[in-house]
Image 1: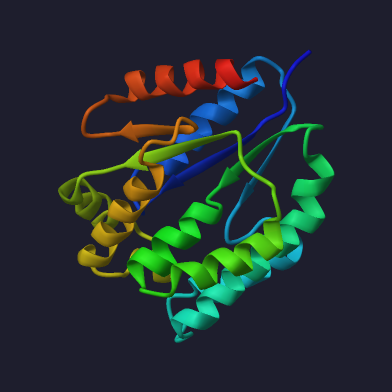
Image 2: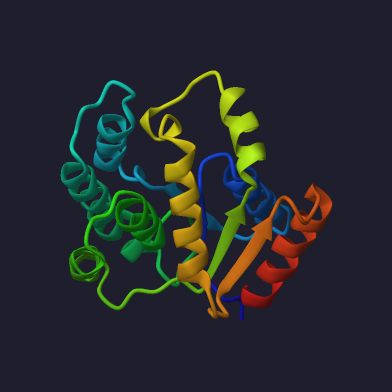
Length: 204
């Protein structure tokens, strides 16, 4: 019997996360496995409206409002998408709880305990089966961000901020068996593709 895991893709801007999600999606399509793919912020119809507010490059929202909107988006996704598909289909999620800790705590300095308590209230005991963390060197990140034509608010932070976020991700992933690190400075695209596919085979 096939397994239907929840698989998360995390990573700072320009780390290759979107490419890695596409690799996973294409592989699942090639073996004809049904899956649901959502993103955060975003996902449900209402969550996509929240996404537009959060990522608007002209947004002047304070960091507490950003946090609460992120969690509101997740709450809608849990109710409208995740719970309905859990253990019925493979679920791919572009950013989840660890993204909130990495950005809002390690990056912006909001209290870890506060984020943890509200997040647990929303997701309960729900836990992903596997997390892919995309990692990038600062120089490569700068080049990739500079080449982006359409940039949102989260593409325009300082590189010091992104460095704190990525270090936060690595701290969150330390000693966790369910984390797979995809470091673009150590592996080429073929190696990363093989690593993703081999990891997927183990959980599905």
